[in-house]
Length: 374
Length: 92
Image (cartoon, rainbow over all chains, first blue to last red; front, side):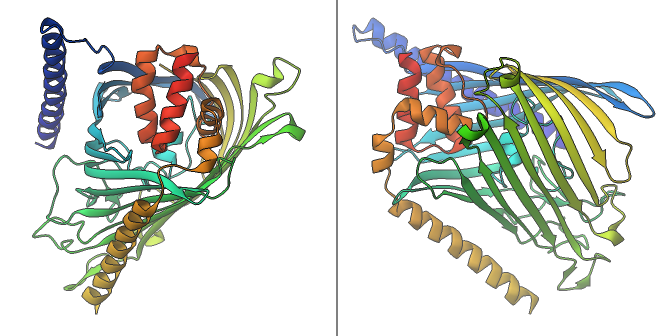
């Protein structure tokens, strides 16, 4: 049922976008036939995407991992902008095709954007939204726990704007979305899940992200994200009325350091998720439902080295930690993860990585990955 | 008691975001620093903060018009930053 709703909504939005494109094209053609000047720059199209593929080697096995493919058609018609995402992946049940994001944006005269549709990752920190693709991430894997604690996709509307306070840059996202639902599945009872095509209750999630770049001539930025919803449970169930509050703090800095003949990438983020464990009718979860995930990354590329091979190498280290309620018996257990790797850049958007991954209570792995932006 | 704390939290959140909206409204859309920065400088600084900066010849001028919009969304670029960067990329 959920799947059919999702497909219907996806197709509807796609048809809407196509109609807008057709109407706009027809207008352009009629203006030509009317003897007016044809404006070829009014409607533009581009296709972006990403691809990655790799291999994991552990003490017990050596396995090629599933290829990851994402294609994103983009349309711009004046101040309207439409983006869609189509992803292909493989599961034990066979190949799967996924859709998302699908959304439309309108740019206001002051540069603010109003957006509506499906967002593949909310502005909750920056990792899932920005740094996750293999052609951007200096490591062959993401931080521990970020898929479950922080990588929220959702349906709704969003307002984003940016401006200057003196010499500081301020950037803000504000959104209203369906909001997450509480999981009742074995192995994840109490965990928040997102991305359902319909809302399970009337409560919406409200929040956003604000970031500040305080220094002139520097790309250093620090951001705060917070989202709140008054109900993550289904009506008529014991979970009805459980509120949730999710919070993240993040920073990013990529300075060029001439004394090191190159540049650094320093990134970090802390996600904190809190779900009430009781309603007005009493305790419904037998544990304090607080979880968190965090990471810090340092990468260095001697891009100004005189050695042509060395200038294309990037050396990276990432530490990440996920903390889940010990009494919850989630499949996702608390753990720490350490990753050390070397990336070779064929060009600005194509790379090959070799990482060594150490994770508590898991066999260490050597990860090889090829990634490119399409 | 519980509903009161929930109300307080919700009120503080609403205040925070109305405040941020007002703050953003009070923000200037232009800035002396940006006015003095070239499109090439902004292209290098903004792109490099997340990923390697793409050479201008990677896309046609028409494609840059679309890609810059995508990047405005991703990086929340200001309008002057967006305009200067795309002008630089299209002129190369």
